[in-house]
Image (tube, rainbow, N blue to C red; front, side, top):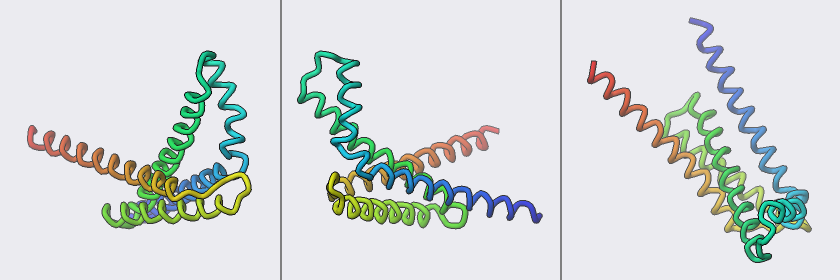
Length: 159
């Protein structure tokens, strides 16, 4: 009876706490401490240690790809967390749409903030990467859900 709605409400708040903490992480990564210049100070020696014969061009490409991959990853996690928080009280489609809207809002706010920083630049391309990461996570979750449902239906049909 009474305990089930309380657990659901507590779970909803925990998911929203995770969303808020992850947004803080994302915004923290957009600070000057994580600018391309700052991260190259530790990434470049690490890459040269792993592969001493690497060319400067290849090293720059790896740093560029790792930085852009981080955008995709950060916002994929944000979308997944927001989706789970929203699923506690909304339908799948509404939850996915609102999660993606949150990704867009945070990405735009983040890049706008970076455009006012001396060490960073705001980029519409980065917003696109962020949204792509969020959309990819939501599609992956939908695929997992569809596969689980198909397996459950197969088990039910078999016996």
